[in-house]
Length: 209
Image (cartoon, rainbow, N blue to C red; front, side, top):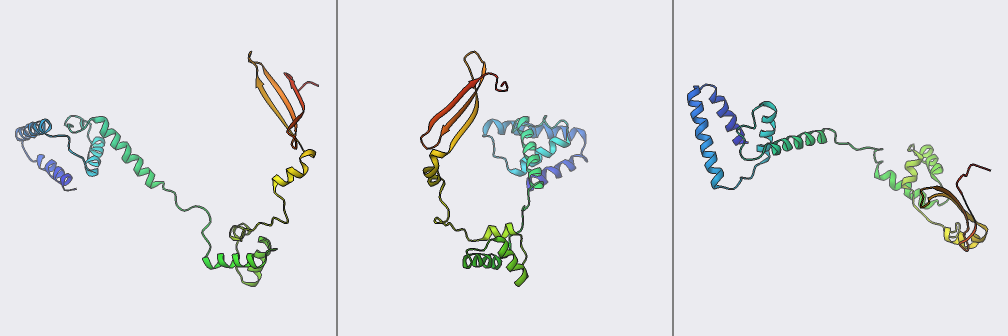
């Protein structure tokens, strides 16, 4: 930051100098920068330096004239990055959704759900509201209920297919392009138990009887 303040202070001093002295000082500075550019590698610029040139490019039309360290395209890219960073911070999303309920309520819901396996979210909602004065939506209660599986009460999909596969048929209706770019419509019926195709039909006009 001190380098930027020094540049600003030098700019203010230049307003009170004569034109001849200002031109000579500018010439001396340019000669030294040219020598420095020949003898040294390009210096590493700080974020404050980038911000200075990005701001200067918006305030001064001839900012490209004294620019030596980097190309003008680089300064334009810096300005775009600063602009994106500004709007990213300005439009930073806050916490969305419902606020998290107290931890003691979560533990209470989980305990009621574990101690009463037959209770659903509606029953727990009634118990919390009537007996304890705690009111939360049923969707919130369902979120914190104990997840349980009852293999004895429900059969898996694989078991269902194994037991009833020969009584279930799957059908599909699809389109296909031929080698001459003609669209044909295909209707397929398959038996799930054996994966056997029991019916297939192909037509170019599916809407006709």
